[in-house]
Amino acid sequence: MLCDCCKKEESVIQISGVGHFCMKCHNDRMLKHFEKQDDFNYQETIYIYEKNGTVHQFELKHLILGAIVSWEATEVGGGYHVKEISHIDDDTGVVINRFYQKIITAVRSKTIEKRGTEHRIDNLLLRNEQYYSLANKGTISIEDNRHGDIVFRIDGEVFTPDEMAKMLGSYAGFSMQYQIHDATEPVLAEDELLMSVKVGKKQLTEDLLENINRYSDGENFISYKDVSNFDEAVGSIIDRLELLYNSFRRDEAKEIGKELIRILQDIETDDDWFPDNMVDIIRNIIDRI
Image (tube, rainbow, N blue to C red; front, side, top):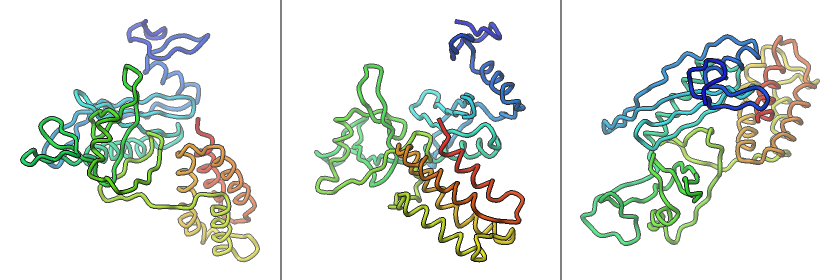
């Protein structure tokens, strides 16, 4: 079905009672609704080079869903699929640079280790005349295929549950800790590891109050001279709140976020932007779709 607006492109979005729209016309309507200029200027086709010279071509697109902007990069002729999310008020230049970096990280940070077949290895997956095993860290996407079966997408390749189990064969006798994240979360880079962090309400609120005491005059007043240091110190608290939200504990994250906002709004200051800037950041996290 053609777009009701331009009458040229195929429609990809149906809005009940309004019509069918192609992606560009839908985005234009959203920008007009929010009274925003179209500053979504970026390369829609990019090429990523691996260290061994392999080239990956990606097609990029964005879709405005209310105040949320969904970004997708799909590899042409390959299996990589990278997602990102932003707010319509975010600086598009900053967002697209972050998205480019995420695509590069997804391609260059390998979760699968491959080795030749010179020696027979019974407890690994044999595929494409190579033995496949999982590295001791990485990123795995959980999907369903066109038959409705669960599959795993790793390094741009798709594996069945049986193949996944086979790739874990070399770790028999070990244990595995894991975290499930939204697909729009950052990809684990080569020089990064997962680490345990406390994300409960008691811990986050106590950490915030501790930093208020550290940078205030004892009367809940933070001078504009200390705001930048306070912002930097509290950044890790907000990062942990976002981690909690993206780990599908969203009701808990919303409750904690509201408490952090309440505490911040009680702070006295002579700064023009603080604490409203931090409150806005927290709201952007807990008010996501």
